[in-house]
Image 1 (tube, rainbow, N blue to C red):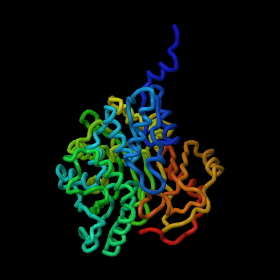
Image 2 (image 1 turned 45 degrees about the vertical axis):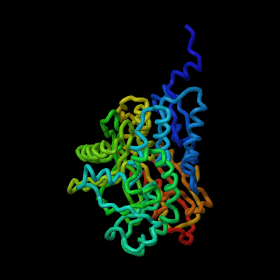
Image 3 (image 1 turned 180 degrees about the horizontal axis):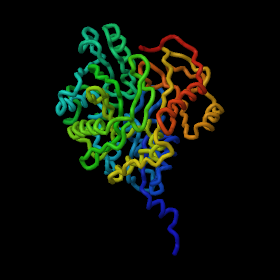
Image 4 (image 1 turned 90 degrees about the horizontal axis):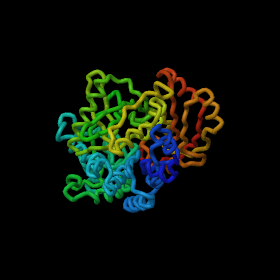
Length: 448
């Protein structure tokens, strides 16, 4: 019996498009056991959707993505992404355009828009929703009076990686934060407005609060911060993993590490799932992945929902590969193909894994030395699972790094697996001592 041709085998595999990916993640997705049944195609590169500087044209990105997909020999079977806006928006519009399974653009917009999401949450969870006020940083009288009593957080309605997020304690800090927003909020505000223009007029944000607005939000921080990874399939929300996030730096607002699986009671994870299921039902979110951040107070059991991201977290991907044997792109692709996703298998090389974000908390600086490949290889002989992503290079002006939080610069990410928390902590200490940076301090370039 003749074997099927390569062309027929290719057509038999599902055509899965990954928007805004890179070689690191494409390779990881290709190692998913089920990937033998998929034809993985990259649509736009990470640098297209997250340029290092300047504005980007959302409409042009959407048109380019359609052009790339139309250039394939057949229509796609699934389209996913793992980055924040604009990828979440592009995926939702592309899936609508090609008639594929995905959360609607309207639901994605409601999740992505910080003020809109809180207004929806207030309808179903009034006692759990923090006070928020919309702030137009360009209004002539914006500086005259703080929108709520100090302290509070000021952040854009659309951003990511805590960019332009400021803890405001008094009037002078409020003025500096408003100035920073006026300088840079348009980087994502204008493309987000372009996305909103694709929505029907009766599904636009409330009170004309567009992408160039900020919000003032009362503080809701608790001792623990964790993330639930999950999905909604045919109206039912499922949580399949919890990851603990640890913080460092000024105001404890910079993320320092992720730990999977989180050491949390199952009842806490279930309570978080119930909260997000109620909000997502009100949002109208279905047939899409999510990751949701919560603050948790172990003493009282209080849970505060921080934000809903309508996507999987790419930062957690190597952790899933180490613990479960493959990245959780598997679940997102199964969902996009119309299937109920499998549970993570816990068949990886390590029972636990962590990601550490190496940061500089200087106001600014020039990178004069980065760890070399020889340094990393020496560590790999002791820590075979180690994965290192260098985010800066020698001569880099830290002020030129895009999409950083307001109080630090991210220099390097280290992923480690291990048998227990003590092993991972020891391994991290070894990495910290062996992988050194040299930063030459420079004058301040931004509000801190």
